[in-house]
Amino acid sequence: MTVTNEIDWLDMALKKILVIEDEADILEVIEYNLKREGYKVICVGDGEEGVELARSLAPALILLDLMLPGLDGIEVCRTLKGDSVTGEIPIIMVTAKGEESDIVLGLGVGADDYITKPFSPRELTARVKAVLRRGPLKGVMEGEDRVVRGDLVIDMGRHEVLFSGIPLDLTPSELRLLHLLASHPGRVFTRDQLLSRVIGGGAYVIDRNIDVHIRGVRKKLGECRDLIETVRGVGYRFRAQSR
Image 1: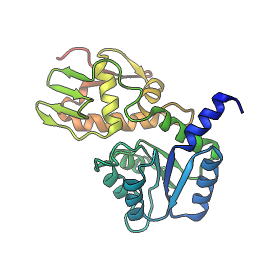
Image 2: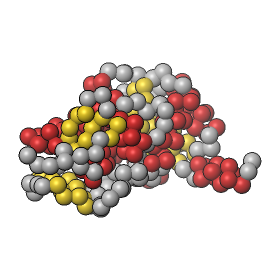
Image 3: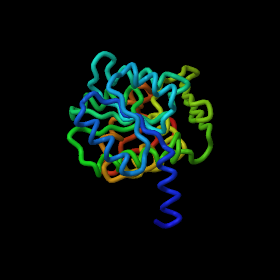
Image 4: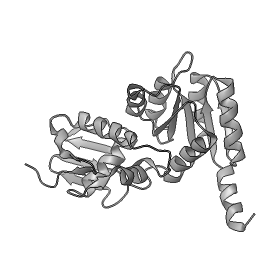
């Protein structure tokens, strides 16, 4: 093992990953493959216990099953993202469902990414590495932390978006996406560019993720949803000038 690889391995070993999953076979696959990559893995099969462990352990990342007994994955995600102690911990939703409605629901309450069962070990580790590589608010902090576009104010330092003085309740990923687009009005970003800068790099992150986030941001912008324009066949851009 080279010095560089040894440092990388030690860095991964210091990163705790909390897995909240009630299916024993899935849990075993996740635990085995992440430990093989050098991560420290803590497993729990209950949503409420998962919330408490997240608060006490402060893991680098959480893998969260959507379908949990008792407190389900959606409520766990909503609770963690709404807590000042755990709100910045990235969450990857793990679900057996592949319907877009489930993806929208998970991302809408703050999940940073998702993976559907069945998944390959390679896909699992690629998703984990991509999200960890990004880190909190990494990859989108281009330009000014505070961006003002007419009545829209995006303050990354305060993790706050105001429109006409009214706060908008954006998820962390939606905040990063809007900040990136608004920082470069008129510039077209492809889905791949948005994925790598906002969601995190990795071949297994698919472009539908970005489309879901774009819809979420537009919905929360309400009557001014057209500030984000679709460039057919290319990607998205923030409108260059107010109409």
